Amino acid sequence: MRWITAAGAVLATVAALVGGVNSGPAEAAVPPVRTQHVEYFPGPWAEPRQVTVPAGALGRTARPTPTLAGTTPAVQALQRTGPVSGRLDLVVMGDGYTADEQGEFAADAEEKLDAIFDVEPYRSYRGLFNIWLVNAVSNESGVSGDPRADTVKDTALGSSFFCDGTERLLCVDTDKVAQYAGRAPDADIVFVIANSAKYGGAGYSAADLPSGSTFHGVATMSSDNDRSYLIGAHELGHSIGHLADEYQYTGYGTYPSAEEPAAANLTIHRDLGATKWYRWLGTQDPSGSVVGTYEGGGYYEAGVYRPTETSIMRSLASTEFNVVGREAMIAGFYADADALTSSLPTYRPIGQGRRITVRLAPLTGLADLELTWYVDGRQVLPATGDLSVTPRELGVRGHGHEVTATVTDHTTAVRDPAVQAQTTTSLTWTVR
Image (cartoon, rainbow, N blue to C red; front, top):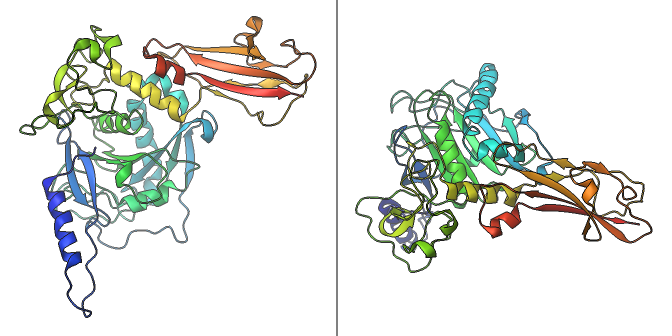
């Protein structure tokens, strides 16, 4: 989501020129225009688009919105599968829900999340997520721009359709979003669910979030449209899997670089043996085509290739990641989360009779976890799969030995050895 519109470039140029004019001491310097690059979705089955919009106040609030001063938004765990240090923490907040509608927000959030987590690989790896709901109380029900451009609502997060004149673009005040997200125990990803049946949404990348934000991105979506969940699923593809958009723009031309794109789902190599997804070539893909090299992607029409004809990263007409995207998503899950955790600290020596209890993340489907135990690097085969052991039960006698628990995910959704290595988590204790 790094594409910059011509309008955005003009705004930046104008701001630079205005700021550089020496207008004399009587006139204050004009601050540069702050903009944000966002992705939006013109329709329920459309390819996404990129635009640049002014940041901050959206001009859609009738009165000052509720501030955090004197109020503490309620936070509840919709799902808690492990410690925040070992999980991806997804924070969900609603906008356009009054104090009396917070129960409705919770129900809408759960329904939307269930739809997102029905998409693979989210479904199989939901156990690597904690999900927090943050109540953001609005003065009025509904959001600006629904049903018409001149509809104005006073809401906690300033959600607005017709953002910068684009009807389906559902913008928010990201400064306020960051404030509310800070109330959760941790935040890696943030969703904003707008109280509306109108289709729309937006995706904000980390580069365009307020300074100091700890989360990777923000996705907005309407609550009561049955296709809007795909916006969240797509945006997590960027923020977790670091996947590129696979769509292109007419007239955008040829990919301008001889360097290989960083994203797992784009390549400049048409030669099948040179593509980064060569291990998947010829596979029948869940998105409907065979894995190969299909020209066009990353907004360019030529000179760059994607793995499949379509996928959720190309068009929301598709509800599936391709196998290359699934593999990248799994790598992203394990970059921020661990399948193996324990409440017993590893930095403190333990006795031979101390019980070590570990916990595996509740993964399903595509995931295939194996738990193994080692003493000084040698596997103790009889203990395979045991969730609770003592060093003595593992055969430890004497002091200075190391006990290690290791979990490896043998999922068939991963073929790259480098990604496979990321699915392994180990914890080691020293026996005193």
